[in-house]
Image 1 (tube, helix red, strand yellow):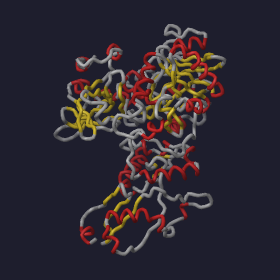
Image 2 (cartoon, rainbow, N blue to C red):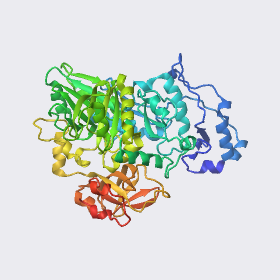
Image 3 (cartoon, rainbow, N blue to C red):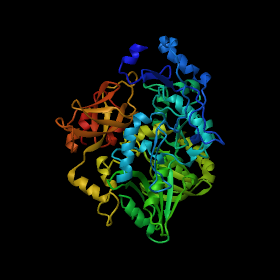
Image 4 (cartoon, rainbow, N blue to C red):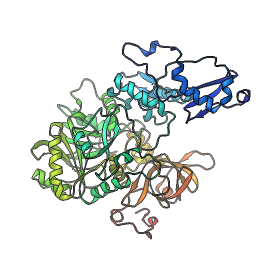
Amino acid sequence: MPVFCQLCWSAVMDADGRIYIRNWQGGILSGGFEKTPKPIFTEGKNQLEIQNLQEDWDHFEPLLSSLLRRMPELETLEIVKLVNCPETFTPDMRCIMGESPLVQGYFVLAGMNSAGLSFGGGAGKYLAEWMVHGYPSESVWELDLKRFGALQSSRTFLRHRVMEVMPLLYDLKVPRWDFQTGRQLRTSPLYDRLDAQGARWMEKHGFERPKYFVPPDKDLLALEQSKTFYKPDWFDIVESEVKCCKEAVCVIDMSSFTKFEITSTGDQALEILQYLFSNDLDVPVGHIVHTGMLNEGGGYENDCSIARLNKRSFFMISPTDQQVHCWAWLKKHMPRDSDLLLEDVTWKYTALNLIGPRAVDVLSELSYAPMTPDHFPSLFCKEMSVGYANGIRVMSMTHTGEPGFMLYIPIEYALHVYNEVMSVGQKYGIRNAGYYALRSLRIEKFFAFWGQDLNTLTTPLECGRESRVKLDKGMDFIGRDALLQQRQNGVYKRLTMFILDDHDTDLDLWPWWGEPIYRNGQYAGKTTSSAYSYTLERHVCLGFVHNFSEDTGEEQVVTADFINRGEYEIDIAGHRFQAKAKLYPVTSLFTHKRRKEDVELSDLQGK
């Protein structure tokens, strides 16, 4: 192929054939990612000792056939050599980078998933910054070593998962797809019960979580095989779950959330938490505080809720994938010679989220105690009896903005409490719901989540969470100086809610996340998460708006006036849709009215 060899193509990729082709020393080098890879990570053999393996023409034949179909004239050429070498792959197709949670000062950069040459420069840059300055210049959480735990180091898990990962490199991955291997590793005690009721599952940090519940009259096989960038087949199912959350009562199993207890014999627990968190945790016993665990730059290392159980004990709830990262951060900053005790109690409690206006009725019957706001105010925690079970931590919050309660149940009582809740709740229209409904509810309420909307470079002042920061709480905390400086200088990005105006839910491509945001025709940022709001009957996106100078491209201060005066578009696969920007959630009055075609969202700006 002399013509091809004279061209300056760096590479040709044939996704259908699963091969790549590139120039190589006057000839052609071709390889690929077969559907049936052979793992060498087996018992009794260290993969690091293996360099070049023996030629295996039978295994390479499908890739060779693809190459010859793409370039038939190659049949007349000589194959100089078949190279058969091992390559490393990770459980989620992303490389591993960062400081070990077990050995301080030990940094890792590995598992490049056959993309080391293309990723090497950027990965090396960020790791060098991490080692020298203590943090990289960009958020690299998706690559952070601490996104994995010991549960992902099982040889059997790795063997099965990497055999799935490698073929996926050339596959089209639709939104909300899930790995099929290494599943049912961590499950709630309610897993079998929920599965029998139609739960469809997703996996987070090895934990099975319900996406939605398939009604008996739905075609389950067709639903499972539905993969699209457009309106998904589960749309109506999630709509009914959201409606139930708003009009009656739903139960969501949220046992996967990370849970820690911090205790001490004296005041050490309060003192260290006051230093590590931005909000004031010196609150009366039983109160819950939403707060952030910040770094020196004021960015979120963790976003969590903390309940004060007694004067010397605190209960901390964090996102599921924060389990290793949060533990490592706390241990790093806790004094070693103190009487502090940090315990990971994630496995000890099953968490049920009781959402909806009738949640108070269900819980009142089961506890024989009044649960109205007068007796059980918002953001309050109390140990109660539910059914026959004692010691249930009941919290008046739902992570969605809807009324209801979180129940943290010792695992031995989980099945009993769930059965009682479902039995008593029948008269109130109770049903199961999943995380897709939760996502829709929290996004339309402008609730940002760590790992999606917030990261280590996002400060509370940039996402409208000033109320969760107490700069005057009487003592210093990590990130305080950076926030004081930012308050004086202004912010250079601002988390904003966008409501799509001219988007056809049935016909247009959906926004999922990562879509470009345009302000007055100029690029201004990208979305971080999105969901369809069944209340507004429109898509809602969250994303950060920047103020880039038209002359230099440098970032400038972003003010509320700058946000409100702009005309916005969200680019979905090259098509721009008009959007209304808001810095605060849509008012309760509007959200409880059915949308009429003549409603102008612009009238609500700034309210």
